[in-house]
Image (tube, rainbow, N blue to C red; front, side, top):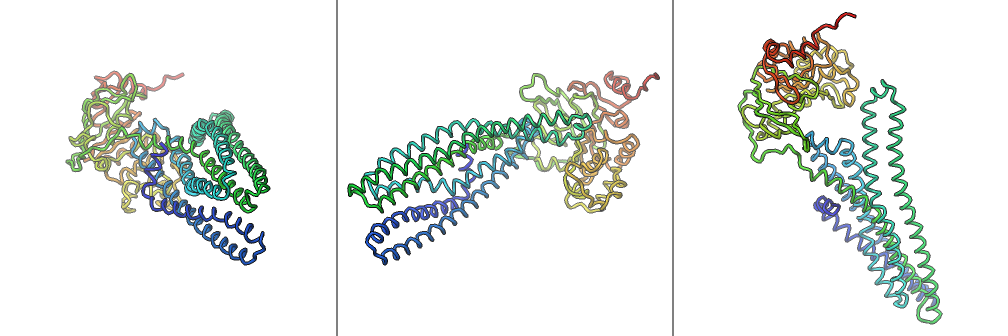
Length: 577
């Protein structure tokens, strides 16, 4: 998974990666040249008292050092640029893939997990790319070239390389293998913390209203403690690495000095060569340590890459047509023809055999008890989810054959949960039509019975709106959402219980104001209150996912017992105590 992700998103930056490789190669070779030059200074300059040789060779060392610095800085710059571009592209790909998901896929992953995958998971892989460009490329070059240079200095001590390098690899590798499952668990714990925190912030009013602060504090503490415990277990394993590396480095230095001194005493080796061999051994072990340090990051990055690829590989259940229909008749007609919807793995469908037609210029109300499938039914029209049986047609064309942009541009949706975005009143109203003039915004506010409170807000149309619209009331959010749909002037209006937060007087005025502007449109209204649907041209009654009655208010009172029960439950006065 990690290799596939890296190959896919690093392919456009092959030139930068090539530059990193070349610069790191030159810089590493330069750094490996320095111990050899230093050995020459000791053996042929200091030992013989040749000051001129010391100065000339020292000058070469300064030049080589300058080359090393320039190449290393250039490699770090190119590597960081490549890694940042990689992170940007992966985040963009995940974001756009999530944007294509239907409500089914979003629910399957969960918003907290999708946020973690887009941010923290991408950051972990991006960090691996950064470290890989700066350290992982250097490590093999330094290791191989260091071994060659060390053997060039003295073959007799080469057996130490066969002992020290494998010992370091085995010691650290055994630790890294134990870290892999811990990293996977850590990412899951991060998801859990995000989930709990998101729920508590979104439901802070409910938490305070029911005095549940202590319980929610304990719930967050449990999630936080679980993450902390997992991180500590990983940290304990990581803490073993550096003492192990230092121990082996120091033991290797002692071994080189011990056996090298004996070779010098036997006349088989010079002091400068011993110094250079020790430097090369340290560089080789440092390269192994760098590679091992990267290997510590690889398991976590691999887990994160797997989670990212799960998102990128998941196809939306709402797929665009291969040859989309882009031109349709402008009749604003919606028809449900034998519609069925079933969630994956569910024993029974949520909707079954739904058939009715919403004609242009008419209002169709959908009523039923909680859980009857009203919102699900309405979500099928703009293809927020797709039918699993039957068909939904707009102007005689199956919505699955229509171009999604063409379909949704003809629909004005006011969702059950009125949501406003951070910005201003004007920016929220122009969400569907960025070029709408101020006069159109005020017209929409006037129809939605929102003009009065917007005029009272500081700045009017430029008044700030907080995230989610939390600085306005529920009824004001609903009216602004209705105004947002009106600004688009759609051919089909979908109101999903969009009047529930309004008082009866405002509800009546709003519906009366809407009527002249929706005469040529098909209007579908999901409602809980009978007073909202009394004047509808057609009322569809749902019960347990099936249509149990269709007609006007008067007709249903005579023919539909379920509708009669709904009416009686709302209109029959409570008996006096």
